[in-house]
Length: 478
Image (tube, rainbow, N blue to C red; front, side, top):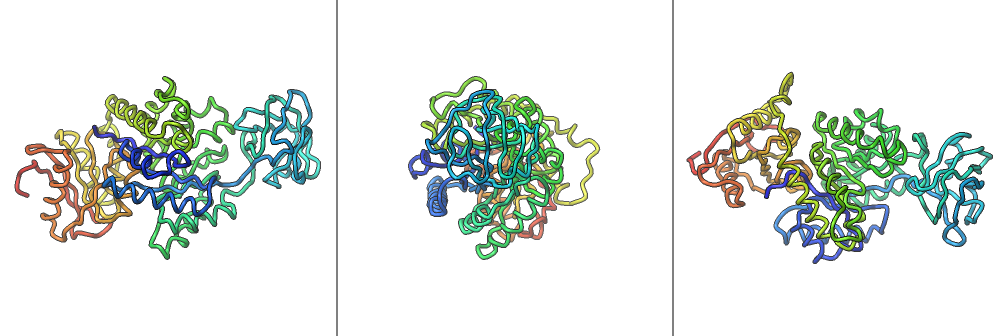
């Protein structure tokens, strides 16, 4: 069964062996996420090599995403590993404290006192603990516990409503970008960007670090700061895609605001011809259980119906008991949700103007395939741009993007409704088109007599050169 929505999965201790990873790829894994918040450069290098080898064995390309840690706004360590906070008690966050106790704890982010004032609300450990700021004295933030609980080493800190000044790219992130480029990753996810400048800086660093390896990754902005919401369009314009990172975002803006923001972000990304990944706690219960909750099934299905390019697994696949089953289950939910998805292609095209020939051909192919009832759209593409434009609209007609470039093939692993395939395109157009049809037929996606819509550029081999649309029946002479 053709699945349009892609699956991103984090690999970690539960999923780093070749045996498990190969099963995950066969189950439907499209993009592997390397979480640079954990592990060493050697760990990531070993995992990247395993991914490439398993993908080779599976006979298809799997993309790799390096997810940067971003600024660590966390409490320090405690003498006894944790403390228990009671509502109403005073508690001090002290930037100069070495080891915490029942009265105070240190801070990884030493500039936090400068960002705060009396009346601010701090949310610790993903919002499970709430502190009201009473006053700030030098390096000390004096608070009153509003919602208590156990607070252990290195738990995260958010300011309700956002406003912390920590830069999106730390010294560790810059070093991690260099490591990621040496691994030839396909995507870099930037944590906590506030504006376009953060993304432009990350892209520049990645391009410079990737130049010796011939790598130019696509940049994904993780939307998890309150300040990123009003700057969403400029962040989209400076990125290749965004991630709806619902964990930290929910802590800053409140849980109730996230579902509507998710729909808005997905819509804006698609309208801007950008990618979008929906992430955080999608199948959280499957860390420990072999089946998801009904609420998790609905969550994944709703992200699909919103039009997300991909759904993402974090701890479920990195540290959970059932990484393979989780991907199988998520894939099945995506397929069922897509069956009921309504296409509004004609409405999408109202009041649209196209200034580029290749984009016009892409839209013409979509429109033609949709109304003729074609079995497939086949795009011969160098860069993947034609496939990206097509993937921004839902038609129930699968798109097959054939490219001679491995980098383009991997990047298109994240494009909704696009199946990337490798084709060493001939310089002769008709030979290349015939080869393209043969590939699609051999994969079982079309049979003799089926209608297929083809797009190609002449002369062959020029990125952005798609200028021809052809409609054929399989079996006819081209």
